[in-house]
Image (cartoon, rainbow, N blue to C red; front, top):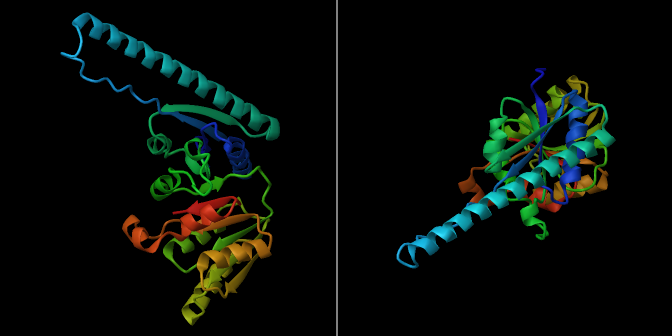
Length: 287
């Protein structure tokens, strides 16, 4: 462990902010790491049309000066909001997880470049399922999740509901490279150790699939995990996984994220996106 690592919590002041803070603090406590609270401000630049010829020189100069002042005021308000947001979030974490250290980060621009700025420090990333820009959309998972997941080399925890300490988890397994990596990630990390685990495959009842599932279960058991391997008969992978989760009262899911390219996803759809949009449980994505 390096002292510079942290669990990066991406907050935006939406309804899921407290959930993001709590799950980030929980994750950090499992690894004895600090939480890095990050808010990204994206203040749009005013659209300044070419006013030449439309009005007099003096009037044009006056309007440009007013636009400049409005830009400065808007930036000051956004900075004040950002300051208050990260301070409130820090207080929230320290009240519930007193032993977890908190670092504050404030960036300007887009979310992904801000996350990549801390690439060397990020041990995991925590994001809300629905951001402030999509708070009124019932099924929208947040415009940034797929973008960040495809670019990230560390696990991403997605949450939305009030924090509930996980007691059980399931790994969605299909024998793909991303699913195998998800198993490898769980096996080498203490985050989920001590919980009741399940590794679940839907369909694919051939010998090769059975061997792959068995090997994945053996890898977890060798790492000290209590885990059961399950073959589920269902025509639809998403429904099969969600039904298994509900029937077994499982708190958290682990998914190998976005195994298809964006072009393949356009024609085939994304199991990852369907699951994220269909459950309110926290999900750990592994790319």
